[in-house]
Length: 355
Image 1 (spheres, rainbow, N blue to C red):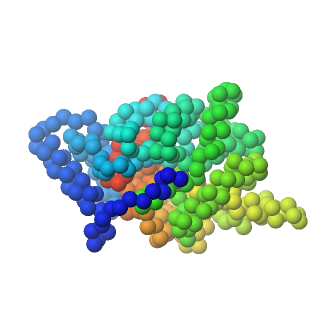
Image 2: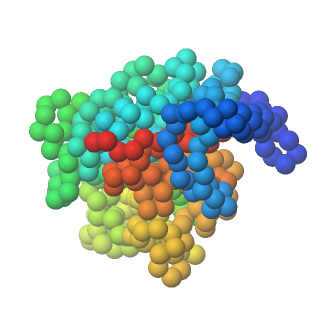
């Protein structure tokens, strides 16, 4: 993929980029100047989880030009949309997106729970037509659930809002487009993105290998079987647990075990939130401080991230700007806000839900 191009950026001895430090200093100066001048501003008030647990407000009156005026440009990463199309449009209108150089990434769960999933997919496909490889969207668990329902291997759930995609003939093209989305995006020398997270012992290289294997399975002849196993993987703590639940005798047992490992990889990339010291998953979805004994956020267990990893999926965690792990799910579908984070300066843009 073209996204793996490297860039030549000189670092300070402490590991930070010169241009990142310089831009942050410029932003602080601009903010102080605007406040002294009593300027009126149009920014959205932000309360975000920052490094060290601090909360802050986006400085109003700050110039919108992002860092990195060169060829590569900035990356805007949008969190879980969940069919909230009007909110997505409102956020998009706020972004200082430079169509000649910037990239747009979406962290998955484009569909379901909100009212206009099909419109969100139309919008995303249009952005891909405009931007080419500078647009990327990964598969989330709700996206994979839609694929499983479309393949006839999972039922619609009472809270699903997917009927328009499943009954409209135009929905077939949208679903086919969705199943060809990656499970992981990675730009060499820059950030990476998955929907949910990684196991603690997965390096980014290992996660990418597993993601590519899963992507091939989703467009291959055994896609229905894989999606059926993925649906069964909900709640499985390890691949062995899933294989035990789905295995059948003799050769079919071996095939189920192999498929279970693949489905479990998909489950990790699209569902993980917390895990124990051994990397076993839990179905916990609440805020981190309410996790069961022994369960901690996956990114606290993971010590090997050498690049920034963007993820969504965990609305109860909320917007989290960690040193290497950045959560962009701020609970839009639950009546809160849809967020975008700009890389590399990690400036936050938000739109309250309006759907």
